[in-house]
Figure (cartoon, rainbow, N blue to C red):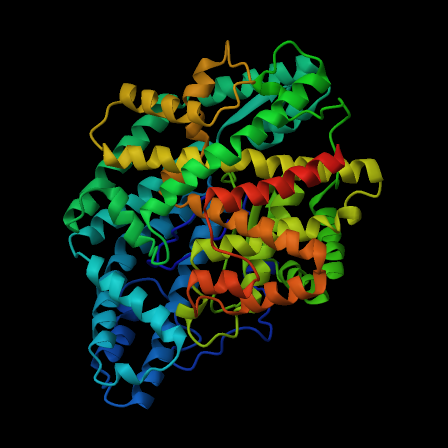
Length: 598
């Protein structure tokens, strides 16, 4: 997942302990990609609105009567945005790395409460100044079209009364990560994070899987009411934001807020239906295959992660150092420059990848527009999923480096449909080089099979989460009982019918609570589905012509957000397409590859 600041200075993406930050990170050296400040002083300390107010005032007072003045103004504005976004980024990263340090949370909350609202108001004034410039039409190039349509949308949606509400929402949203980071279980007299405990769900001992699954479930179930109440608070405030901006509901508001210029809500609904008809039958195929291979009368939810031949869990690495080392070898074989990028991050302390108590859940890549080095955050515990996460976030990181030389921060701020294309494609491209993680051929085949099954399984999940979020905000006055009924109805549409949920009905009814996007980044999820389809298409091309496909991939990533989404996909050699016919075609390819591994 990629954190994006495209819509405000507050992170619009996932939040996915002992002091984490080493001196190495706090004093990381500036490499040659670092932005050289031409407008702001290097020693600027951002501790209040007053410390940065003069720079906004200067930009607001600057004349924009010539093309040269306008271009210089845009570069100053871009530098200011880069510095502010990175300042907030480090507060956010530190908070996720250590949720137990209250001073870190206070630093983040101070920014979003006392500084960010003033930035938002003044950014709106800057946007209006830009649009009103008498020489605006002299900005030639497709990149300015993309940038200006975004600026115009921001102006249309801005409401001053929403500024404090959005700031409050940002604080409330962090409660999900705080609650989740403190959820642990005790197994074999050892305290485990839920990420660490999930490794036992791959155990070949069914009794062990059942025991740990029930411990995890019991711990999650303790928070059901708390998460339900949290979501209700968020829905109420989000709905108010939408109404203030003259939208019928938050669903309509968020569609525009996410700047979905290149597709419609009808396209999203087509995606839901296409996944139902083209992918759910493949999920049923996977579940039937697993049930038959395991020889069980009932396939239980705690049987879904175990190897179908009851082989022990794959162990691709033993510690974070080895994960990084093997990733470097894998990336080097794809493209040496990719490995160089990850090495730069490692040497400068921009990787935090191990799971620990007090660390927020999830994983993300956070672009840092002044350092021009991204930061990868994840919760590795030594399993295959960690490899997938590492190469996924590594794909985001490669994207960040490839766009680092673009002139303006607006050109680097990526729509999620493009950001996730880079990361998901990297998962599949890198899979062709996973021999660096698995020297045993049988283990390599098992890893690839698991990856392809994961792709098939996640698409219906994406569809049901998106459809559920649509319902949540179309009926914002619903109660807990109605919410539960809506989830069950939607979830049932995408079920294989093979998994037996008897005795675990509560888990099924509230499984949506595991999806932090619902709490922290509403409606940012269907983009994964669009990008996954694109990634499959890129992988298919890579299997036929790796050199050409990689060149197209790099060319598309270097565009940043200087052309439209369909144009970026076309540059990558694929379609931006959600039709049943196209998805069927891609799924036939995936199933063919999966069957070859069985």
